[in-house]
Length: 109
Image (cartoon, rainbow, N blue to C red; front, top):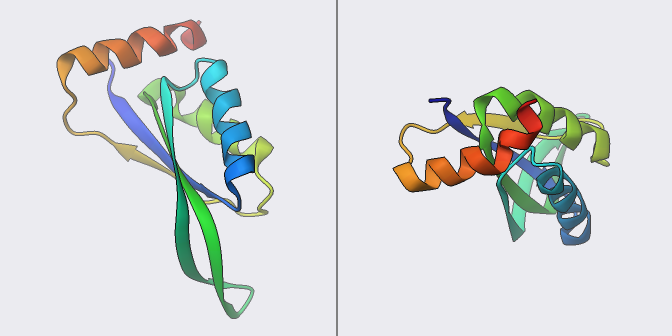
């Protein structure tokens, strides 16, 4: 059976994250997205140490759709260089994996 992956990304606001997350899930590219507001990031950008308040998003999808999820994130994202990280999932409860695969099957055709 195909493997599950998580696609991790961050967004500048809850409103933007919800719009993008709903759009990607609506297309069946991911079975679910978790949106976690309230993250504080410290990072280097263009030679300056920056601080930003961001929203974490974790898409739950199949490995074969990770590239399409990443492309959708890039297309909708306001950042020039969005954080997009595909994380392999080592183990998934069997019935949950079945649900995830069923919910994303439509996008694989």
